[in-house]
Length: 446
Image (cartoon, rainbow, N blue to C red; front, side, top):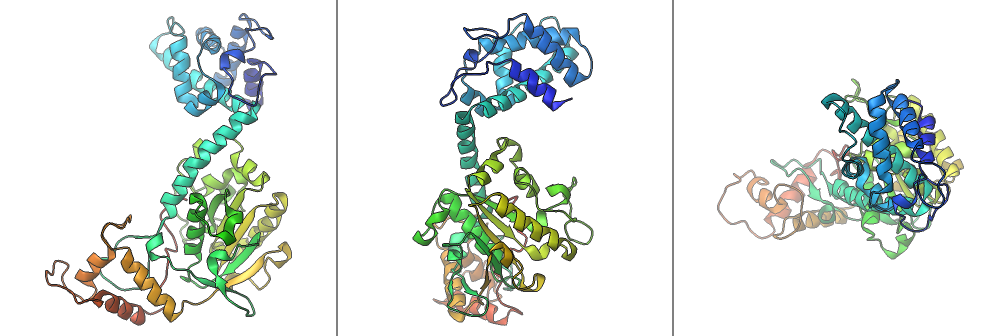
């Protein structure tokens, strides 16, 4: 199948002009009726024949006749272009089937199934054409997809997993709002610290260093969720209305796509790969609704300078591939100016000034202070209060009561006030390293 030939055939079905600043009825756009027609109904069998031969690599007269009847129904279907595109190919094909009930009347069962497949395929091409021809349709589709994508970002990243505290039967995850506390960043070489969430305030490009478990991924999640919700403090007002792309480097595969079986490489590292192109961002991180992405959407977001690109974990790229990654981080911001970039890495993985020539400001996460540990524990307990929304199976206070001190979970006796916080502080103090605030490898597909 030649995509260019298919596109030409589909384009021939519609008039060249027509409004592009509002919804337009499809029946008024077809080229075989109306005042501006460029085709007659006798041209439909010719177009159908060429389409069948392209799709099936051979002539099928009965299918050609059936598809011509289906194409004729474009002139009677009661849909505008925006609604048709939102329906998608499958539902739009059903509308055409209803509008042309006699299209299958001469077909046997096998040919009827083939015609149904052809009908849905041609509908996909038609909807793509309608999206491309009208900026209004494009904008409407982009807005609808971005609304869904924002909700998926929130669902995927509005929780975290805590490692390094040895308590039995821990919940799987914690609400981000309940467990998160503000981290601090400082410029390499010293200087006053500042809240990590404001690392992007007044900056377009930041390389953030932090040791393992220091909260780099947590910060990425926090920023992605805050931007998706539109819940931003005044210093980050410049992020409002942006589209967050969470891009964990470990998820990249050759050609920017996941391996077919979805399994990691035997050594646990991703297969070597460059940085994915914008339209492959979502497939590269295995977003489950990638197929719903409007054609060219990510490219448009970046071209308009509306992106927030959160590239997490340069250190998880194989050492031999990091220079290729650096080249991409040089080329993409130059190609798409106006977007905001946050790149994270362990300090041991990249040299000082690794991205300085690309005008990235280099910051590092400060160690969690004693006061920070105390604030973290208090937030942890807040997540377990009755009525607090959380995605985990049980609240932290409930399972701490049963397990933090080695007691049975079903122990019926009361616990002294403040006992849980004492238990957790003890666990934090006796942990072999600092408490790790986030999952290094979250299971979310974003």
